[in-house]
Length: 112
Length: 115
Image (cartoon, rainbow over all chains, first blue to last red; front, top):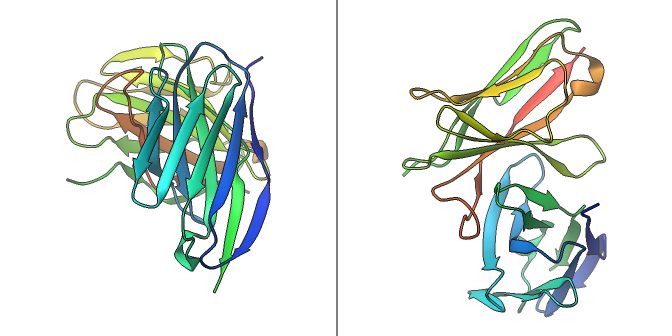
């Protein structure tokens, strides 16, 4: 059974800290991995997509890495801001049908 | 370029009624996905469609649920004879290509409440 696990479930940090969110997956035949943020009552906003042939992707203060051998992806957020407060979800693209298997998310609070 | 548009945003139905949720993908996108987010649960895949074709419906409940993406018009997720357990947020997403390069863009969701 394919599973995606995100640790920690919740995280609270002071503004300005660098932080790492973790995502573990069990499917070695991963196609891609996508990170999203979700604000309360809202849809998901795509942050970064890493294809299985790639090791990392960067966008602004965000950097996502992918290690297929260990079944892990990390999302690194530099110089966190209160506006980064949200739930972060990782979705594993598994199989060639395009569907994503999601973790339960990490809820991040950045305190001013 | 408008994003993925879903309507209605909020829908209240009585048990036994039908719910129809509509999704217009981003312009130029021919791949549509439906996901469901139940209270206290994660986001679960339901179905993946391309124009006029269902590619993967492995996450769809066997009864009462159906989805279509016609040649013209939006994708429709239809739930017949709704029950309280169907209360959830239903998200539509779209991409312009299939995997592995398919960045998936989500809509704002349709919140279904069954009373």
